[in-house]
Length: 59
Image (cartoon, rainbow, N blue to C red; front, side):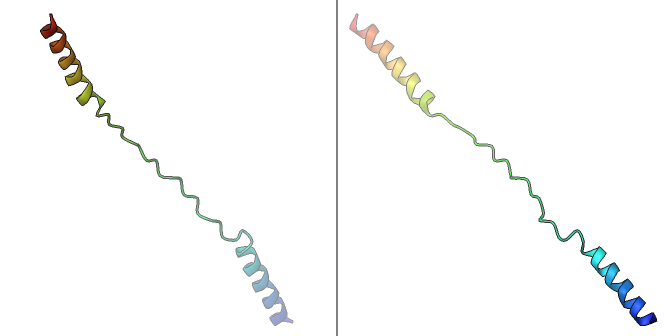
């Protein structure tokens, strides 16, 4: 009878320890900051300067 009680107690403890189960780890997504670069400033400024020079030369 003692072995039966011991077995029942161990079964109850084992069942309680696995009651929650394993939860999937929650990983937050990595934040990636996109850097934007514009090459328009490198092209527009010389074109405007060329336009001004052409306008002055035409007069």
